[in-house]
Length: 203
Picture 1 (cartoon, rainbow, N blue to C red):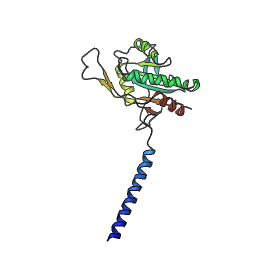
Picture 2: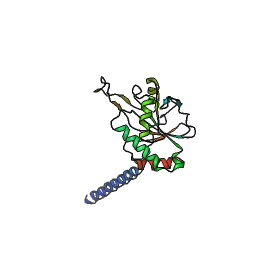
Picture 3: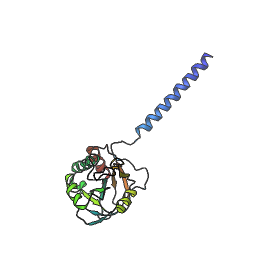
Picture 4: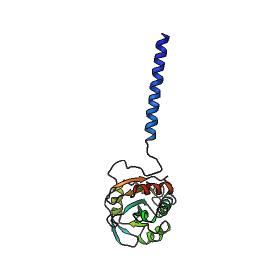
């Protein structure tokens, strides 16, 4: 009887060891959470038709051959948006000139009622000289936000105020010249990690 107990115990240990090894291998294959993350599906992104900070009409085809680095937010945002735009600007500055020239950083407002072209023109240069600010009608913004699976709405607590706050998701999207979204950067991505990922993703 004791021999059977020993055999069963040994098999149990072997099984546990195999499970631990498998889990360790799977864990090592998980993507780094501070770099460029794959999108949950290939249905992220799409065409858009908007107005830039110079009051000129632009589309997703306005920058042929460029990689688009797109962030959705609004100029009255108290914290998340300036933080993310600062990260994008710093990451762009860390790239060599040739690599940076292949990337077009874009800020698309989710608050077109307040973010006019003039407001964007005053806002976006604070973060990077090449950052383009885009706005449009409510329908235009709703359409591009839908394409990129962006969540946004007025905060219930401030919805009746003229100084309302917008609740929104906070991701930066890297889009290839062919229009395919390569991946996304989460809000905890540092400028260093973003720059490294951009340097790898953009040939």
